[in-house]
Image (tube, rainbow, N blue to C red):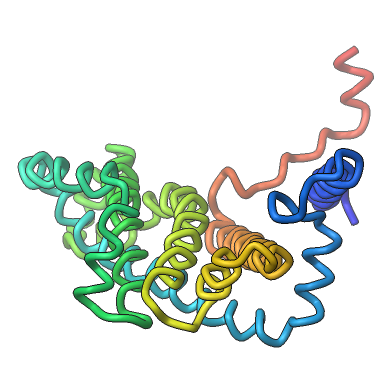
Length: 265
């Protein structure tokens, strides 16, 4: 295992060790904070229940994230080519982004009912503005020489979009997706706990939080959502390296030729 892959593992182990030591040394009451070992042990004992719940939460968060991305690509492509439309739309996107989504979750649940609908709607809505901003910025961040070259070969607007503008926006979209992954999981977790449904990690967390003697169950839900998030980010990084292998940020640094150290000295 190389050092680059080993470093995150070291960071996680140290963080959990400090957490474990803090709880045990200061005898933190269990309804305030549980030791990681206790939560992981509970999670393992009831792994079937948490696996089923995690699959529901993954569907809510990842499908909502995908819907947000697809809608953002369409809207972003239009706004990138029309400054007036961008200026007219920007206040609405900012409004969606800055208004606390916790304030209107209950209204969405009353509107769409319990189950999958509210979760998908909320994840899509809240993650949409960041994807649109990333799409517009990425599509406009194209070298003028590249656009002149496409114009010289009479490339259509569709060809410019798919061959130049979308690839240009891809790195920014991946960066935004990293942020939106955590946001989508937080939204899915909360909506599952607020939409009167018994499905998803959020539903487990809601029931556990309502009782002071179920702290193990609550912290097992916290750990399960964290595991889902870390796994999603790892898969996203792998997808980015696969799809953007051509991008400069994904290339490894070239090795120095032999003897260059002596020459530099």
